[in-house]
Length: 295
Image (cartoon, rainbow, N blue to C red; front, top):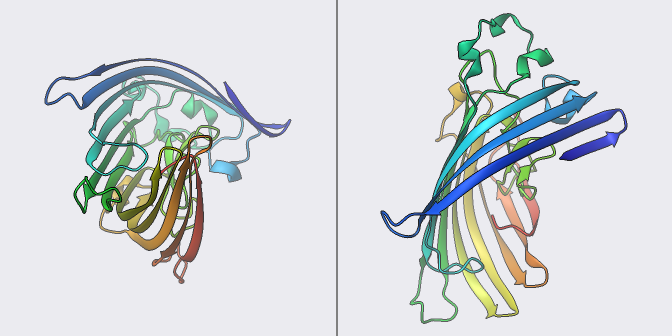
């Protein structure tokens, strides 16, 4: 159970449980694995201001029962400074389409009525692909690497009048909080832009990246490498507006350091080349700090 309380009269509470099963596959090769998960989540809101996360109601309860399946292939040689291999993840999580079996006319219910969200409905699809290509023989200790990334996410619905306010995407910035379970949204990084500045509560996103990495220190007690990168991505609240070619672009440089006692840390400088949310000026220069995660 998680509870966020800014003051005693404003509370966002999550209660959940899940059970899962995973198995390594032998076909097409033994790098594949499949996982299934059955979960339940309950959201309790009390006087929760809509200005925090744009949730449609301030007081009420909402429930989700989900079945998730993840297919993954991982063939990287080292999780800290990866020189060779790839990572592929395709996941889907879905609730039952309860509105298709009831006589309730959700088109006549207000979007601010908590009763509309007593049981959430959605199907969420995510695809993530990463590749790592060495630019020198692996016998060379300081092997530079080209890393590529492609990500896509879609939050779909069964009934256009019953859109879940949870499990959406917040895109932009460092993405350090990863899955923001306190607010039931998923944070997606896009360097060169402020946190969540691309879009909040989005129902679709795409993110592409190209990164050149060069190791400075590769020792058992510390790993340090420099990075130069190009990124592009965007997010949309309305699935009808989804356009994978309408992207916000950025470029920058940075460094990563891994210490066994602390984990991964880093700093990036990036420049955003495009305006956001109706702004007439480019995002411009941005610094991003990383603790315990890799972009």
